[in-house]
Amino acid sequence: MAITLLTSVFGTQINLVVQPRLTERVYSGFPAAHGVTTMFMGSRGRQVTVSGRIVVAGATYTLGRVAAQVAIDAIEAYLWAPAADYSFYGCVFYAVVWESFHITPDSRGKAFHYCGPGYIEVDFIVQGRTIL
Image (cartoon, rainbow, N blue to C red; front, side):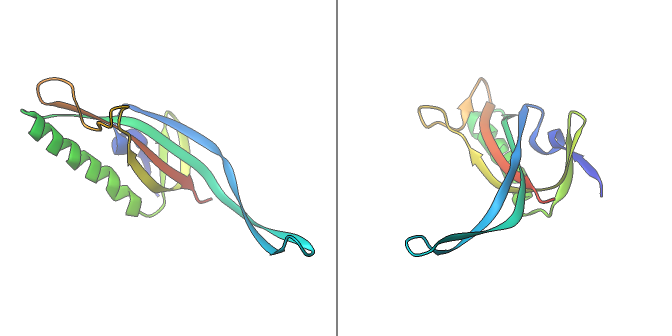
C-alpha cells in the first residue's frame, strides 16, 4: 500500500496532533441491583487531528470562494475513502480513516476570509483515527 503525504491531501499549512488510543467498553447490568459489568472490547485506535488553512486565489471574491469550495470538496471526499497510510514529517500513520471535517469560523461567524484581491482563507479541522 502506498504512503500518501498529508500535505498532498490537506495542503502545507497544517498541524497534526495524535492522541492516545480510545478504549471501547460495553456496560451491562443494572447499577442499583448488583452492579454494572464492564466488558473491554479493545481499542478504537489513535485519534488523528489535522488542523489547517486552505488558501486559494481567484480574480474576485466570488471566484476565490468557488476555488475554496472546490478545495473543500476535495478534502471532504476523503471521508468516504478506505483506510490508507499517511506520512507527516517522517512519521507514518498506518490505516487511517477520516471521520469528520469541520470548517472553523472566527469569532464573528465568518468562515471564508477575504484577504486581498481574490485571496480566500478557510480554517478547518479534520478528525480521523487509526484502525490498527
